[in-house]
Image 1: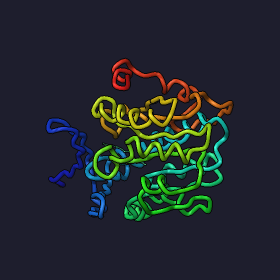
Image 2: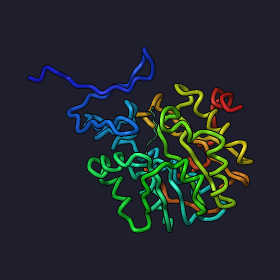
Image 3: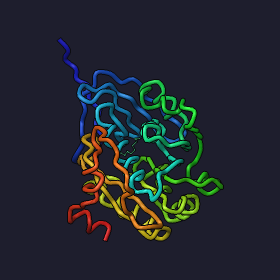
Length: 274
Ligand code: AG3
């Protein structure tokens, strides 16, 4: 009889946490940037945690990765051909862009060890980095946006929470550079946190984007393993946020109804960005 149960918990506050019963801890490393852990959970498959926060699980990563790629894809004025991903070291977002048929994808991840860990433990996601149209750069996305003279039709900010290494990915100077390297009619999108448990994050995203873009809108998705399960993304454009005439086949979460309805926001969320 096994008497000991092992649990991984993400702490939301001193009084609240979400716990996963785990059968194994597959890895724990401290990198120059953060601490990375991988657990084998009973109910959600393998789980990747960074600094104690859930980044993805095998069972529900599809929601986040479909929603952070297909929405900007459909809301670009023209069919996007190339994209930049900042963060996204697990390869999940790049993989979705490959499926959407983009010609070239540049993925700038600050922590090479996230990529190494995911190649080993989440090969179905990280294998996107081996595609010949995906260029992986290990480096600082903020500096990349400042220096590059390339232009992108779509820019995806797939970051951790806006504390620590990702903080600069929510500010105005960063978005001015993003605006400079985004094609006219292109879309930038960032994950912008849980409106319920991280009410500042979505406002930060709007504040960072608004000075550089004329149109900013948030949309939401149900992600069971993130704080509150109710998650937001925020997109910005220089031209009105309207859907291009193109119909995508349904994914596992995304479909054409969600493409429209996910912009409908509850009143308390509207207040956070007013
Ligand atoms: N990056 C955003 C995860 C934020 C989750 N926050 C939290 N659990 N407190 C996801 C990486 C997937 N590519």
